[in-house]
Length: 283
Image: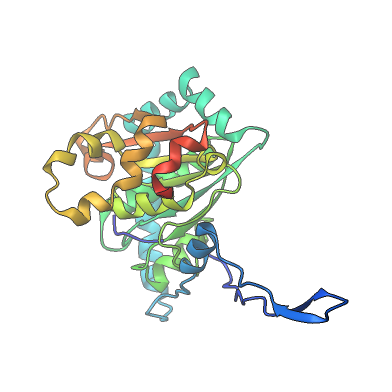
């Protein structure tokens, strides 16, 4: 999957430069000290990158062809042993309890799909999108689906919308803050995108609101010694730090038909209890 990132309107944060009276007797005025931004506010500003497909052409023949491919893909996947096995896993008491813990008092959690890739060009993105849509259809507590990848064409955007998904008009670079229960569906995204997501939500309350379907964090940890490039190590900082409070459940690809799209994918649930578990970022 290509790396990616959501619909928000940028806000301009200006410094408060009002004059205030210090003492009515001395009538001395001073400027209030500039308000400093929190890390969360800075990240929120950084994530506002308006986006639209570079090709604005409406091509009904391409749309029809892609929709047909998606319908065939979903029908095949829905009847597959892979999908039925995944549904059985979701319904096990262990995973059900994990999902219910994230949901808390909410009845649904929306799904955000980052890095879906080119639906017209490759089989894996079509399989991944098909799985997301089928999960929504078969799991009562999954709500609306939002999708983003900077490579999406106008044709792909229209097909996604026809399939009931919302396409984001802003590139969040993976930095959506989970203010309420949310599933992030990110199979085979780049490590940096997972790390961005965790960094943006590096608070106990927010991490407890996240379900992540994506590359195995355990595998990242196992192969860390092989990463000689410091940039790769840097891009897994939060991934590795989160391992100590992450419950991970690997999925079974079952057959070669689905290995390419879903190999090494896992469900991840984050359950830090104390803010002290997150303190490495506050040095």
